[in-house]
Image 1 (cartoon, rainbow, N blue to C red):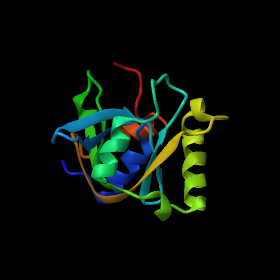
Image 2 (tube, rainbow, N blue to C red):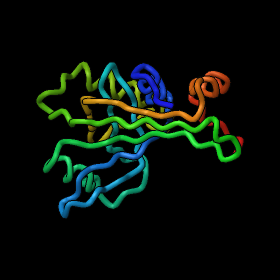
Image 3 (tube, rainbow, N blue to C red):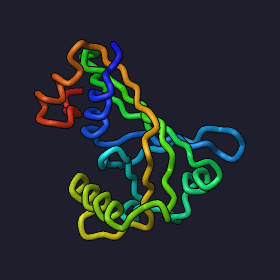
Image 4 (cartoon, helix red, strand yellow):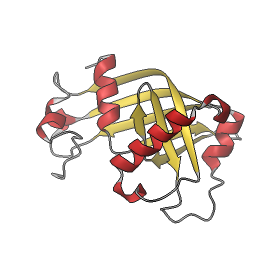
Length: 160
């Protein structure tokens, strides 16, 4: 069943990760798992130095320089109970650095550090901030929020 706009936003905010899809140089879709937060009606994802990388000059940055649009896909999959399945897709447009206030940047960084303890005490190499153009979603049950509420918030659980 289709999720309402409010249910999509709630599930996005509760998701612990997503897959960011950008348009590659050769017309391909580049999909990478990302950490992110919802701040107001914006979504922020860091380029961090916590996880091992050869460089912080990542493909998604190059892709977004050429085409500022992207898609974020979040989902919940519980193998033994498909009634808990849901997904949300957010169509995004990257905000340029000069369109990003210091206050919004600080709020996004603070929320990322709150949500992901691994980021506490670190600086980000870069911060991707997106305006959300639209959200859509689907859930297997009529009450897609029931599991998230029962799990105390994020609905990720460990009962695979």
